[in-house]
Image 1 (cartoon, rainbow, N blue to C red):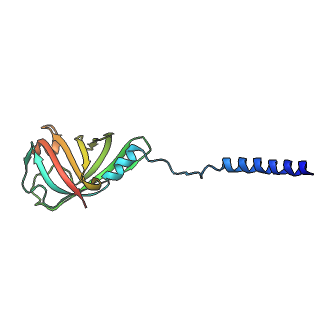
Image 2 (image 1 turned 180 degrees about the vertical axis):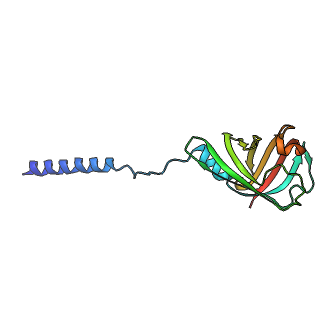
Image 3 (image 1 turned 120 degrees about the vertical axis):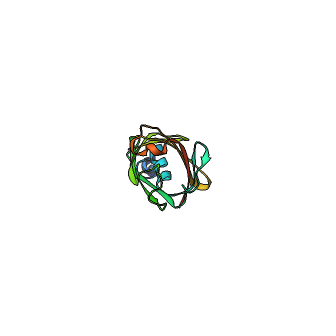
Length: 162
């Protein structure tokens, strides 16, 4: 009888170990975040210009009332693309380095983010400040850039997240 009780307890103990070990902490069906998705999440939002520089010289009035809105979609480690729009409170005859709206696509990510706008301008983005609430965008507009040829130069814009 003791042997039968001992065998039953041993069997119950082994079965409970098997059940316990098969519990893996739950299945999480959500995909893990990718570097692309992480960077997209940081870039998404409304950014208010705090200063604009052309060839390292501050350009007066270019930051006044200029808001850049970025959003997009990430497909795992694949291409990340998005849209941008601007809310430019400056006078209508003011030269512009951004269209009122357009699209963009990531080229590379890392400590520096690089994306290409739909007008084929390559933009380098660097996030900084507390909680990545400062965005610095640098790009060059060449003479043959079509509609933007009146604002040729090396541009840097600094934004604060709203």
